[in-house]
Amino acid sequence: MTAPAKALAEKLPESRGGINWFKYASPQTFYPLAGKLIPLFGWPALALALVGLYLSFFVAPTDATQGESYRIIFIHVPAAWMSMIIYLAMAFWCAVGLIFNTRLSFMMSQALAPTGAMWTFIALWTGALWGKPTWGAWWVWDARLTSELILLFLYLGYMALVAAIDDPRRADRAGAVVALVGAINVPIIYFSVKWWNTLHQGASVSVTSAPKMASIMLAGMLVMALAAWAYSVAVVLVRVRALMLERERNTDWVAQLVESSR
Amino acid sequence: MKPRHKRMLLIGGGVAALALSATLVLSAFQKNMVFFFSPSQVVSKEAPQNRTFRIGGLVEAGSVKREADGLTTRFVVTDTANRIPVTYKGALPDLFKEGKGVVSQGKLGADGVFVASEVLAKHDENYMPPEAAHALEQAQKAQKTVVQK
Image (cartoon, rainbow over all chains, first blue to last red; front, side, top):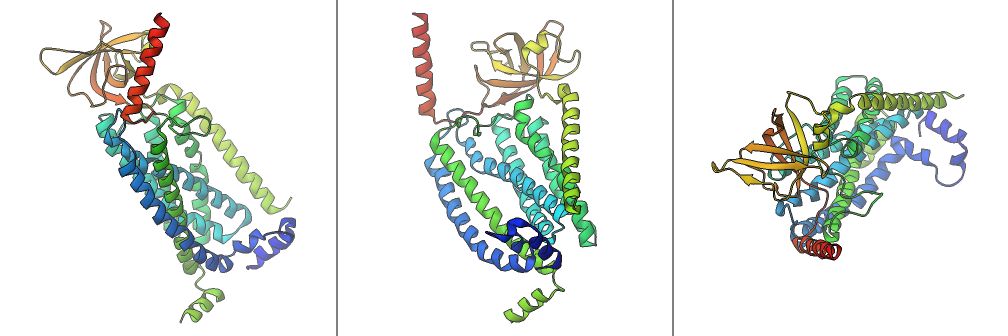
């Protein structure tokens, strides 16, 4: 554990009893934990995706109005959910990093960004493929579509900015500001279909009302969403491990790790 | 106050200020954020005059008529309170149907007829298999006959 993290952990009353959360705030202790967690998320991701795809394409019935093209929701909706959730997670880690000065938080945020950008791209792309047969247009500039496109640019901007600054500490801070400012966009995306007239339909699934879709369709979509969650966690852990090794390459623990793996 | 409490307040305050300004900006642009205007807004002259805009609503049941040239379609967009006749020349999307949502872009003529240059079908948030849709239709019909009696 690094000296500031240790000092912090000793000062906090919560850390005396129960789980010491700050123990895993240092790359040295988190690295092996992340390694153990990867298969615990990776294999379920594969299993859930197989079950989800089977439900989506072989079990779920065709839609009354859209026919077969509605099946895009099994990928589109989980991708869109993940694009928003990952951005919030990224902003959360950036805030934690700025407040507690923990290096690992920024690494988490940087590990999340490419996966979030990928989901955003998938959501936009599958949406366009669905929009053409359903609406009659690949793209329209309504509030939902435009704000989701802005989300993609925020991810790309964050990654570009972090990559452009050579000093990692400064890169972390500059990126964190972008991530935090951009977080305002997430509620705008989510509520856009409520606040304004949009071509994009309202939410079929929400916390406040019963789902507006047949239960077998909903089941397929939720299983796919769980698969997307598990996949994202596994991939982000793989990436954060690589980042830890890269950025801590001059420390003793990485040297020991390399030594022991020889 | 410890430095990390200060930073926490600073970030919390910053995000809150940002959220507030975003809310103000968005509410100021409220009118420009709408993707389409409803027939009622068009009737009350809230929609832009002499300029292209989009009109959205339901295609009134029984209003779709095809002209002899096979390309021009006439239909009525309604929000159940007001109705605007629309004429459109071109291919319609597959989901364009009477009683379903539609968004079309064009200009309002002096005669009150909306000349559309683009027609998009608006899908609703309901997903169901054809059997369920059929059952729902039957149930609605049954309810209507009960009301009429």
